[in-house]
Amino acid sequence: MNKLVVFGSNGLLGQSIVERFRKRYDLYAASRGEVNKSSIDADRYTRVDMTNRAQMKDYLSERRPDIIVNAAAYTNVDGCEKEPEACWAGNVRAVENIIDSCVGFEPILVQVSTDYVFDGHAGYYSEKDAPRPGGNYARSKLAAEKIVEQSPLQHIIARTQVLYGFGRELNHNFATWVISRLSSGKNIKVVSDQVGNPTYVDDLSESIYRLLERKEYGLFHISGSETISRFDFAHKIAEVFDLDTGLIEEISTEQLNQLAPRPMNSSFVIDKLVNRIDWEPGDILSGLQRLKIRLVDSHG
Ligand SMILES: NC(=O)c1ccc[n+]([C@@H]2O[C@H](COP(=O)([O-])OP(=O)(O)OC[C@H]3O[C@@H](n4cnc5c(N)ncnc54)[C@H](OP(=O)(O)O)[C@@H]3O)[C@@H](O)[C@H]2O)c1
Image (cartoon, rainbow, N blue to C red; front, side, top):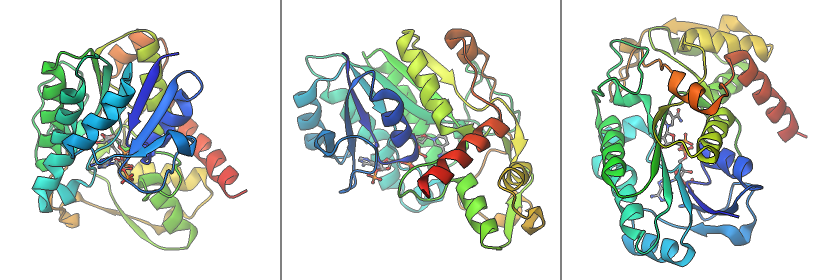
C-alpha cells in the first residue's frame, strides 16, 4: 500500500482528501492546528507548521511518503495583502520546504493552486493560457506552481476554484455562508459580475484520486462543469435548500471594495482532465444535493 501524506488535513479540501484516500492508501495527515479535524485516527495526525523547515524535514524524513498532497495554504485572499510575509511563507516557503525535505526519497507531489493566477478578463481558461496574477495571494500561488514545476519531483498541479462543501469546524465557504445567513432570515449582498465554476470539494478529491491512480501528471484545471455568476449561484443554493431568494441582494464587485483584485471571469475549460480520467465533476445541482445530504447527516 502506498504511503501518502496530506498537508492541510484540517481544511475543507484536506478533510475531503482524507475521506477519499484513507481506504486505498497508508495515510498520514498533518496540519497546523492542535486539534485533528479530519476523520483520520488521532495517532496518524501530526501538528506541523509547514513554514518551519526543521519541522518539515523531521516529519517527512521520518515518513518518507510515496505521495504528498499539499492541501494547505494561506487562503485568506485579502489577508495576503495585509500580511504579505505570512502569505509568502504559507504559500511559497512551505512548498520549498516540502521539496527540500525530500532527500533520499522522491514522492509524487500534488500541489493545489487557483484560478486567481488569471486576471479574469477572458474567461474559459485552459492549461495553455498564460497566467496574469493580480495581488499577493495570486502571485504566491503562481510562484509555488513554478517551484513545483522546476523541482525534480513528479507532480500534479491542480488548479481549482470556488470550492464548496462540508467539513468539520471550518470557516464558511460560499455555499455554507449563504445557507447560514438565509436560514436565519438575514440579507446577503452578492456580486453578479464575478463568474466562475463552483467546485464541489469531493469532486476535486475524486479528480486528484483518479489522476494519481492513472499516473497522469502535469498541470490540470479542475472545477465544476458549470459556469455561473456568484449571484446566480446564491439563487441556486437558496432553491435547493428551500430558502428565501428575496433575501439575496445583487451588487457589483466595485461596491465591495476588497483589498485584493478578483478575476471577473475565471471560468475553466476542463477538457484535459475529463479526457485523462474518463470522469467529469458534477454540475451545481448535484453538488448542492450532496452537500445537503452531508449537512443533514451532520445534524443527526
Ligand atoms: N477555497 C477555495 O475556494 C479555493 C479556490 C481555489 C484554490 N484553492 C486552493 O485549494 C487549497 C485548499 O483550500 P481550502 O479552501 O481547503 O483551504 P482551507 O480550508 O483554508 O484550509 C487550509 C488549511 O491549511 C492549513 N495550513 C495553513 N497554513 C499552514 C501551515 N503553515 N502549516 C500547516 N498547515 C497550514 C490550515 O490548517 P489548520 O486549520 O490546522 O490551521 C488549514 O486547515 C489551497 O491550496 C487553496 O489555495 C481554494
